[in-house]
Image 1: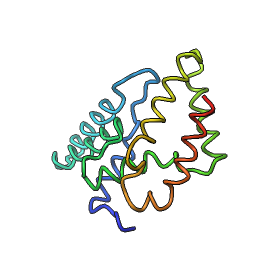
Image 2: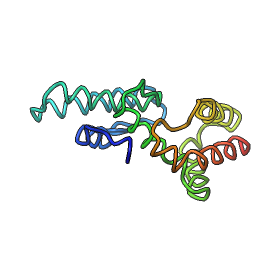
Image 3: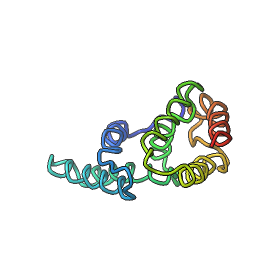
Length: 151
């Protein structure tokens, strides 16, 4: 993998803590998950700089922006990998998202979901790393366009 991170343990830890705190309607899940990671790692006597890097990687999944950080690019691409799944898997994912938000009326859910999905299509590229672009970019675009059209 050309875009391999030099910080595999940090990335792996961030993946474990990603969405560790998840409230369906909460807007601070990433922050709380990052705080949990930082607190846990600090209690385990992990270097505070490493704990902070883990927390930063968790936070970057909120906006899916990596700001040129190779580890964050890989973290975000891993988080978005579902977008490039085969069409059947992705369609099930969209059905699962809708089921998760079943208490939200369709007239509210559909425009909000469209806006979220369209944000990925409006980017110059969906994926930051060449590894994910080569493997998932085309399928992700197809999945996103189909999901938007179905809303």
